[in-house]
Length: 289
Ligand code: NAP
Image (cartoon, rainbow, N blue to C red; front, side, top):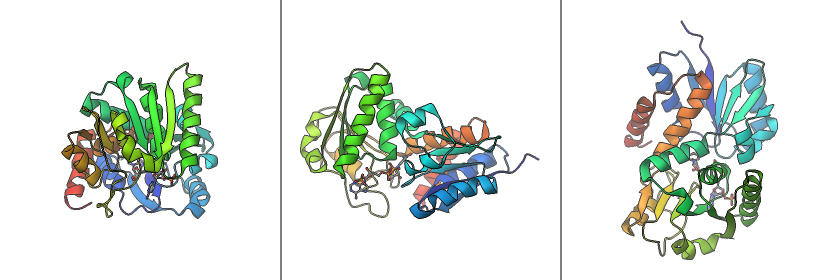
């Protein structure tokens, strides 16, 4: 029998997370005797939770809202890409006992966006709603794959500005020429006409608060893609409104599956059973999350 290891997710709140159901089904599919648990970790207890990971021998965790940025200071090592992004969503306890952080959000997002929309990134003017951990990964991956114009709108303006400086530094370091801008959160609705990719990276519209939208899409470019990384519900009100206005839409589910599959590969060294992961998540969502 293979060795059993404990994995998990640390987030607050965490009860809504579908990561346990997805990873446990993936372990079972490959005949691995591991277990993945949801750990509800309040911000005040983040440091202790990371220390506990080492002390208890927890082999790996995913990190979600609101810990992706703050967790970095407690890790021994950060993968170069996660360092550039400034957020970690996957932590691995290495054989030498050191904790290493990775980020699979950006790669998961890009993989699903390209697969589902065939977007032409060099021709894309993107508006990112939100400047948190997920937004950072998405922004770096958009740039890495050719997008040269990104505007950020965030409720807390200075976080948008910090992210824009970080992205400019990333472009300088990689010899990329592009344009990063910030606008006020309340300006975003009236500015939507200027963009052909609009991405909601905030939790607005997520179950149970499904009746709210991050912005009203006053006007849209023809062929605009509206993308929402919230995946519960599958079709958020924001996406429903965008579709009514003639936009192409991109749901958050496939990002969730791909970021999870990449994390699973870090955890186990095995190729993730993506179809099974998608199947159990969809089943759970149909039962109401
Ligand atoms: P985070 O680091 O805590 O960032 C949250 C962002 O949303 C911040 O920019 C925050 O703005 C903004 N925000 C939160 N509540 C808001 C409100 N009521 N009005 C306006 N802005 C608000 O969280 P995260 O890890 O980036 O996750 C964000 C969302 O993405 C979550 O719903 C998460 O479940 C989802 N997500 C989905 C996937 C997927 O695979 N589909 C992957 C990662 C994350 P302030 O700076 O003003 O606080």
